[in-house]
Amino acid sequence: MTTPPPPPLTIDVPGVPIPQGSLRSLGPRRLVHSNAEQLRPWREAVAWHLREAMATAGQTEPWDEPVGVMVTFHLPRPASAPRRRWAPDRKPDIDKLLRACLDALTASGAVVDDARVIKVSAEKRYGLPGMWMTVGPLPAPVVAR
Image 1 (spheres, one colour):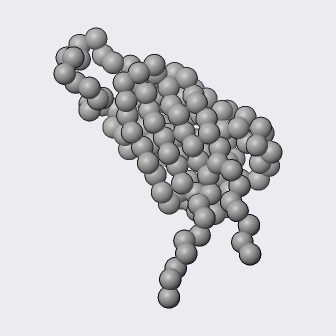
Image 2: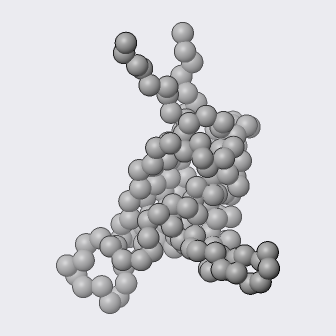
């Protein structure tokens, strides 16, 4: 008999989601993110919310198994956007938004390494700025022989 997976963690982080951009060289062995001054507080906020959810759920150890992530980024609608644009189909790129959140998973201690993420569902929407995320271990698939 297999034990059911622990319940997933769900967080709601207010604020404008910040993408994790490319690295920029400042000289020999000195690399920084191109938007480091904005990125660091955003990743720390995501990690803090994850740690709070872990404490509430009684999770003391990081997951060291395959996990899945569902995330929705709520972005502010630019004043210059025409009314017919119903979705944020411009920058920031969804993969760069995800990169910042997945790195925060590791920084928070929720997951041993973001390489454990094997399934992702992500979307961008206009709305009150913030991010909603659910993360949790995935059950092993049943394989028919």
